[in-house]
Amino acid sequence: MRRPASASGDARVAATAVRQAAVADALASQAGPADAAEGGLVVVMAAYNEAGSVGPVLRSLPETVCGLRVRPVVIDDGSTDGTAEEARAAGAVVGTHRRNLGQGDALRTGFALAPQLAARVVVTMDADGQHDPDELADLVGPIVAGDADYVQGSRFLGRYDDAGGARDLGIRGFTLLIRVLTRTSITDCTNGYRAIDAAGLARLRLVEDRFSAAEILIQAAGQGLRVREVPVHIRSREIGTSKKPSGLGYASGYLATIVRSWARVHDPRARRRRA
Image 1 (cartoon, rainbow, N blue to C red):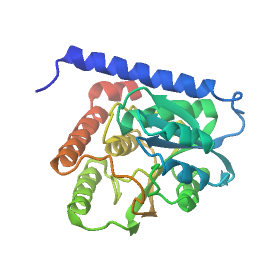
Image 2 (image 1 turned 90 degrees about the horizontal axis):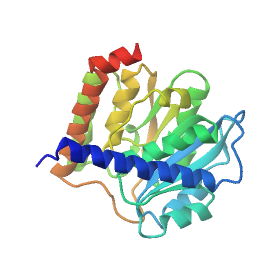
Image 3 (image 1 turned 135 degrees about the vertical axis):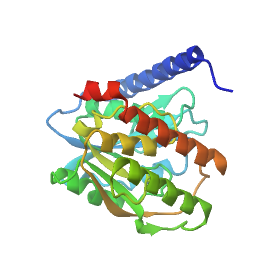
Image 4 (image 1 turned 180 degrees about the vertical axis):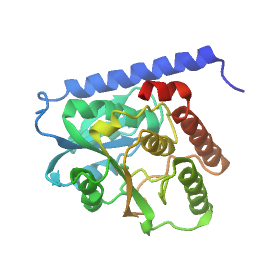
């Protein structure tokens, strides 16, 4: 049953308050303001019950990438297992949601922190160890060189440890749909390993709390960002379990997000605001 519009609006207001509180707490924990001239690389990780994984991932990050200082940001999305404490101990800026909002909302909280940390480029990567930090330069390099605004990782151009099965076919099907809608040549629409120019990121209008990969990509193409793809290695998860819905729940949720995101980009009111 669909929720009444008033109930949906109340939920959005409550979620916004949770995100704003997380940003304020994260900034309050910093020793001082970021150097605005620094122009760093902010690596945003949305994490939900990733204790045991998030610490090793953070410690594996390099200090600099393509001449940019790396600033890791972890948004603990209502975890109950000590994720936030592990991330702080590993040196990350940590924002904590008082309750679970979803990966999309967690990324939006991280994106809100990025300008406060003098980001020039923002990277999103998983906190579960499936993304290889050694490939950060492949994602960031084209943006620093001025050749792209948005660089998406692709498991199908690179390596995919868990290839095959229904999920593999589903990703390819959704990718084909997004290729048609956005007129891009991407091959992996669900990959969360991406780099975005900070100025370009500020132009995106993101609202989805879950299945955010489709929305971010559709918004990037719709806002005229120069989209590029590079090969990456998606590794098998070694600790914990996936938080994604299984079966038809994932497929129906992702498809609905594609439809809503495309509709928002092509809403005449949104076009007038961009003009």
